[in-house]
Length: 304
Ligand SMILES: Nc1ncnc2c1ncn2[C@@H]1O[C@H](COP(=O)(O)OP(=O)(O)OP(=O)(O)O)[C@@H](O)[C@H]1O
Ligand SMILES: [Mg+2]
Image (cartoon, rainbow, N blue to C red; front, side):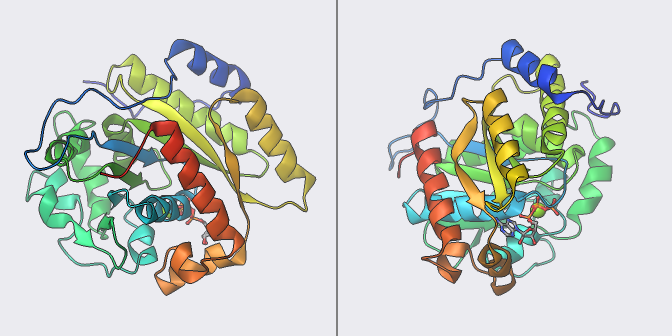
């Protein structure tokens, strides 16, 4: 059984990134071969994105919520999964936490994932909310067989159902079992990096974990889908330097869209609204629309 619990090494990010890129296929995925067919809809595979980074406060949730909303705005059926017991993505789309409505039950083998899907106020955007109980899953999963593969199994019927073109998983700020499960279940890893000192160190750490999962053949299909630079402050040289450095190391992976630091993006969650509903014409909306467009083009997503 593969283990993800050996202590992470802090390695200089530069060689690590190069090693990872060399040792794995980072070809950007186009549509996968269809294996299951719905009678009513043409089969369109579901692309599962996980937004992970063990660093806290780097824009994972803001990106998960607003990228999901940007894709939904383009009529792409999108399911946002809140896998963080903090439940920030849940409240950011205006959904109340509710006992028994999260992936906690399905991860324990109780209840169906379909029962957990909750509509949002936004067309084409559904949510699987989080609740505090999900924190217990971190501990309980460790005591089960195949503990890294639970989420993949839970998502399987959803992939087969042909119901969503895109699933976006928002991870907690730790590479614990929930995040590792999401890496084992996803097709594409999106990493958010705050444009600040030490951003690259965090990048090295998560890439090392991905490498371990790949070495253990936990998820041979996982690709580095892209790196999103967040909270860019154009007034500082440091922010520009960090973006340039990531561009230099990961020219094919970094998204051209850089998310600016703007108060509107930090206010929107307290109103339970994605940025498009809170400040539709502001720079935050423009940036996440542009990121959505890039994601659609890069991964060949189109509306069902
Ligand atoms: N582009 C931005 N401009 C201004 N504030 C932002 C921006 N992106 C995120 N924030 C704010 O920064 C804080 C951290 O962002 P967010 O919650 O998205 O990060 P996170 O990586 O999900 O955090 P955690 O690791 O705790 O889950 C939040 O208060 C959020 O509103
Ligand atoms: Mg978060």
